[in-house]
Image (cartoon, rainbow, N blue to C red; front, side, top):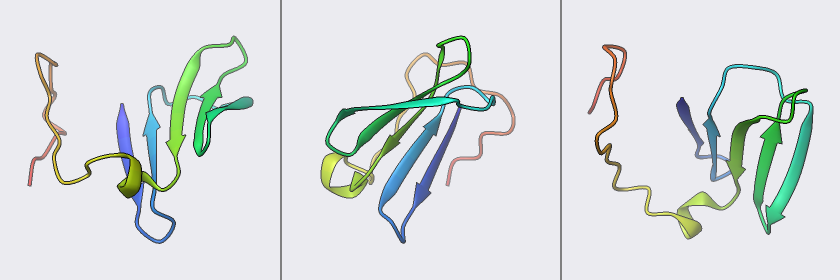
Length: 72
């Protein structure tokens, strides 16, 4: 899973699976879910993320983390 924040557009993309999305559905204003060809959820795009989420805090609880996670 990857979290990508784009400051210039204030959007947060949460990539759940590294596969191509073929369908997108807006589930609420500015929140779009992406699906693969089999209908699996592969990502989520959140527009105006700083207004909808607290981007200053991030925590993982009971999530196994691999070595490529580098906290700041």
